Length: 388
Image (cartoon, helix red, strand yellow):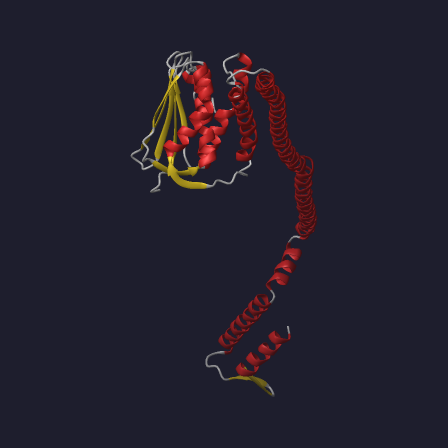
């Protein structure tokens, strides 16, 4: 308002100057025109001032004008604004509560998921892992038990086999002792009988019986020595014919008693490297075995030759009753000979053939048998020659 009055004063000072007795003006024309112009300028300035005031504070003026023009509407508007503000406040409050509830629900859901996961791990995953661990332990224990059971079973089988072998060995010793005693008893009876009678050949029979007992004892003792590798060989290079002749002299009484023809085809010049006493015992055993299985007036043949490999092969053959082919591979086994003696297929202890096998193998040679029922038997053994 002060600005309007100030402006009005400026306009008035610009248009009028007051002197004593009259009004002076700088504007041209009549007084009426001047007054109208002044009034118009004043109204214009007033309107300009009012417009400037309204522009400076339009809300207040508008609100005041509105209050002045329609007071009832203003009250209603205030109440509406209050209701709107209350509604907005209630809406905001409800919105905040909903957001809080949402956050709370999300937290509860998250916690529920966490607890659910914990429960799942505790009551499902952990028991499953424990079951798997227990299963693996049980499986490992079962495998260990199975392995131990197999080992125990193997040990039981081994103990059973060892027990059977020990029992078989015990039976063999008893049966072998009985057969040896029986064979020695026969020779001793012959010695006693012919020593009391005065026959022409009494001394020869006594000497033969004594030699046979010596052969039996030698076979028994040397078999165990050969098995224990306790026999020392004294090998020399010598002709085989000398050894075959000495062996024949030991069993000549047996061959003459059965009228068996013995022929020796060993070349006098053929030599080999061997232990004289042991190979002589081998030939004696083979010829004794041939005499036992050859009928009266049968034939026994001894021969020797050099093989393509350079070794010397000695052969003892007969035309006796022979042995089955399926027995040729086992006749050198002392246990098999015991069974043969029990069944009546063998006529001695059978240790003579076992002795032959062990003695020839100790010389680095081999011994084989070829026979069949009623077709006689052929025994071959090899010895290193003088050159080897």
